[in-house]
Image (tube, rainbow, N blue to C red; front, side, top):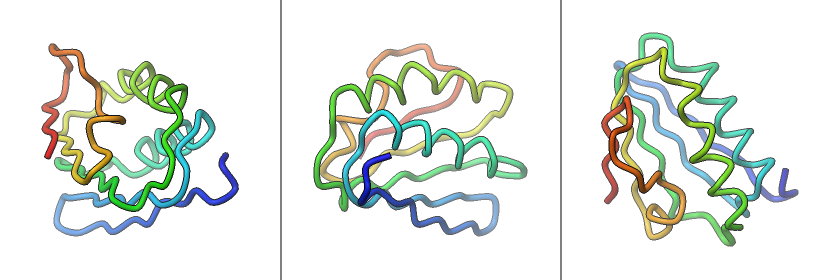
Length: 102
């Protein structure tokens, strides 16, 4: 994991809010996927804030996008917000969850 990467998590009323901080690389992507996997019980909405990411490595985005389908047993809406949202969010259509980018 990038040495300065961290995830600040807040869970309220069926919603999981994740604030990503630091650099986003391949290991950081797996870390994010792990946090999602471990915290989706009774969650129907996820908001991932990318405003505090400093550097996004293309490999990190690829790792996240290519492994997001491992969460398909959960049904939830996921929203990516912030200035770096488009760099991390999946670009393909037809995902099993509703994805919105702001």
